[in-house]
Amino acid sequence: MSACRVYLISLGLTFICTVLLTKMIIPLLTKKRIGQKILDIGPNWHKAKEGTPTMGGIAFILASIISFVAIMLIFGKALDKRDLFCLINVFAYGVLNCLVGLIDDIAKYRKAKNEGLTPAGKLALQSICAILFLIAMGITVGVSTTVKIPFTDIELEIGFFYYILSFLILCGIVNAVNLTDGIDGLASTCVLTVGMFFSFVGLAEEDSISLSFFGAILIGATVGFLIYNLHPAKIFMGDTGSLFLGAIVVGASFILDNPILVIIYGFIFICEAISDILQVGYFKLTKGKRLFKMAPIHHHLEKCGFSEMKIVSVFGVISAVFCILAYIGMVVK
Image 1 (cartoon, rainbow, N blue to C red):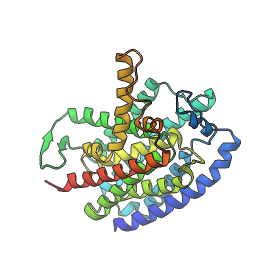
Image 2 (cartoon, rainbow, N blue to C red):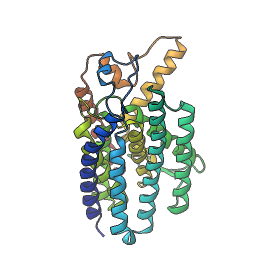
Image 3 (cartoon, helix red, strand yellow):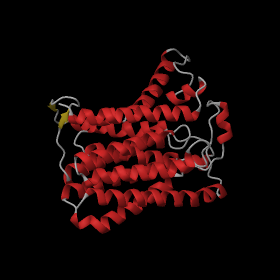
Image 4 (tube, helix red, strand yellow):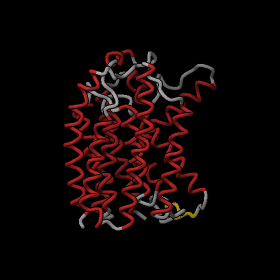
């Protein structure tokens, strides 16, 4: 069975369903007044976005589920064991994280604030998702505790520390993608480049049906959603959407048997997370001083005068460059 067939069906189905479902969900969310709350500490021009429908990630998650079910029904029996369980495990990990995001978004809606679950509560739920994912991969696919160093032929056997590293990467990247979702179209654009990376590697290099599928749904979901999410956004994905996308972005690295590769192709997400960590740490150490005008880094650039579209464009290009570097890191020894 050709990975190309799975790819084309998944891409087309996810894109079409995302466009249609997003168009349907905007008036429903507006009617229910499920709108974005804007923090007072944010850029003052963001106040104009107050009330924009959020939780729009539900649309592309449902579209992805439709594609997943279709692929399983059409091709499920023909999939080899590894592809089958990689598909199930990574997709289930994405859905579990989207449920965490949904709980968080509902809590924000009920509190009428931009604060839902406590950071500790959110991290606890994400940790459970990560542990379940690692257990499932270990039982069904088998996990090698050898880490491959990109751009070299070095492979390090790190034993039990592999699971600690994987856990940190899983939780870290999921939250990093969530932090990137701060201005119109930014998270979707950066995830789109990762979807292109998965697509190329899955189709051209690995002939991997599972990796091709995740490349397809990331592209279909983000392109379909960007029609409504580019500046000025008509809808936001919410934590429901960003945690789902983050889980797929990092979960698929395990299909490549090299989770540390996400450090390269997920460079933008990591920069966003690091800028936030540095801001908080510097603020505490200096008792109130700020390293950036605002964190994550995209808000700092906004306050420096960069438009949202310029930030999205530059970050998208940088993300694409690092996806290319990740590919080179895979093939160059």
